[in-house]
Length: 152
Image (cartoon, rainbow, N blue to C red; front, side):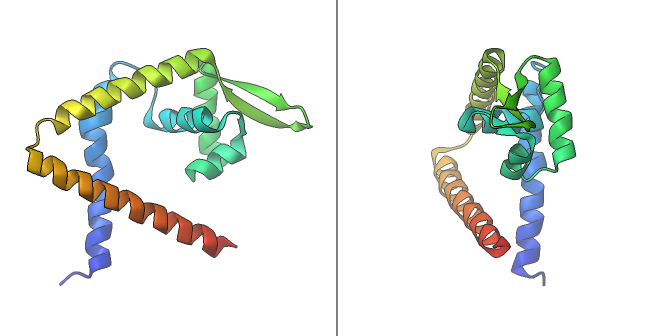
């Protein structure tokens, strides 16, 4: 018999590909923005100007991976580099107006796509998924909080 942590790990590892296949993949044809780019743009929208290291820390991504994503976003004029006024060695990243508009449009398209799929569920299934997803979110936030406290 498998241990609970084994089953949980298997389930959690299965969720991301299922979400990608049902939500993100259909939008891929409409935009060049990758899920990683969406995460970076979302962090910049919430936090304003951030350094590459800060973006990496927020998303738990290695700095070289963030650099590749940011370089691609710069090519598309979705973000710009800006020197930090207090320390010229630090380069910050800022979401452009074009980036903000593209982010919001893509986020809306993803939301519409997801809602259409959720509408295929019965009311009972929607209620069950609502409770399960809320609980999962709370537990994952708890895990991150415990990890953060462990670092110090």
